[in-house]
Image 1 (cartoon, rainbow, N blue to C red):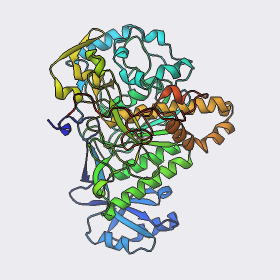
Image 2: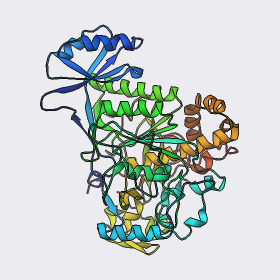
Image 3: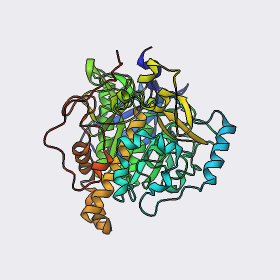
Image 4: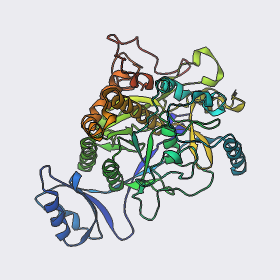
Amino acid sequence: MSSKQWCAGMVLALVGATSADAASYLVLGRTGSDAQTLQKQIEAVPGGALQRALPGLLTFAVQSDDAAYPARLRALPGVQYVAPDRSFTLGEPRQVPLAGDAAEAAAQMRRALAGGAPRALSGAVDQGLLAGNALYQMQWAVQDVQAPGAWNRGYSGAGVRVAILDSGIDCGNAWLAPNIDFAAAASLVPGEGVCVRPGFYFNHGTHVAGIVAALPSSFGSVGIAPGATLIPVKVLSEYTGSGAFSWVLGGVVYAADEGADVINMSLGAYPMSTSDPNTQAYLLAFGRAADYARARGAAVIVAAGNDAAQLGAGGDVGVPANAPGMITVSASGPAGWATGNPAYAWLDYLADYTDYGPPIANAGPGGTFWYAYVNPSQACSIAGITRSCYVFDLVISTIPGGWSWAAGTSMATPAAAAVAALAIQRGRVSTGANLSPQGLANFRKTQVDFVRKTLQTGSDDRGPRGRDPYFGDGRVNADNASNVFYHAPRVSPAPTPLTPPYAL
């Protein structure tokens, strides 16, 4: 059984963002060009129409049914690239819902809400509320990043805005709704609103959002930064899972303009050859998007991908994983955690599906399928809930109508985004930047550097000693990120295992 048979979370392909009658293109201006002048020149070229202008990125989305139109655009002196406006397409992740069907999910939801609907945090996380929470007891990922350590200091991500660029969100979800900034939420997907349809099913954006900021309660999963504000920005269709590159680029610009502090993108495309001029165009466009966000204080955190591939090897890269300015996250997790076998208790094996390579900045808990290769039918029980043992090695989070396990770098990325939110809150409090609008404005000028440095020095070294292509600077650690007195050890620990003891 290959790892790709078990890949989940974020499986992506490239398809042309075209209709039957017209093709779509991204037009990138040369660095230093005047965006307004270039836009006027593009609009004057016959045979096509401007669909979206992103002047801050010197990038424009156009559409035409004229095969000669791209050549006319390339002839403009200010144009550097004209590339097809491709689409990201989310593969359906391998998921295991908590409930067996809609009726069971509805019953679970009634029991959960009977214990008290989650409320927006007004202070510290009430960990006593979580003591009897069955789902919290199976959230190994929250323990892995040591989120309770941050909560004990009073940090929850409060005041930090995290944009979720994804396939929309369940706006009525009781564990998420109090944290959603509905005024800032937006959809860039034509014909679709940011709020997904009701029902009981897997929605990628809702699962990702819950990993960041699901509220604590007596039942249900809890986010790593449950006090953070969520800004859902829909850039992928909830029905097809696809979204044009231009929609995603526009989503980054929108989120940065809306004051996002962290932008989570659990999406990407691989393989793309560096010898292809179109690949260079995409890397440039997303690099510009990261720069645009950085200038406004927003750190862009992206998923590495689920191809078990080395990014940058053989000329192949991921987009936006390899784009400059991105904080790219690989995935790790346990390998038989629920069995209780001490030999399998380690939580930071490299995920069997994760992409790796030079662009990896950090790793996050995304879950693994290692144990499924060994004994997929063995049953385990945690807090009275029984499933195949390997299921508990996945990440449980919110979906419309209930909860589901899933795994992928899509799940690791929001864990890193949540740790970044906790770090930002700590930085603002410890410097007093949170005491005035001007203080916050000044802090935001260096906020992205602060996030990068905190994730670099505060993460737990995993895999080979020091920075490596699998874990980057290490698996993110919320306890360290929220501790102003933490200093990285001068000597890194000994190497830790990449794979479980039974891996071939």
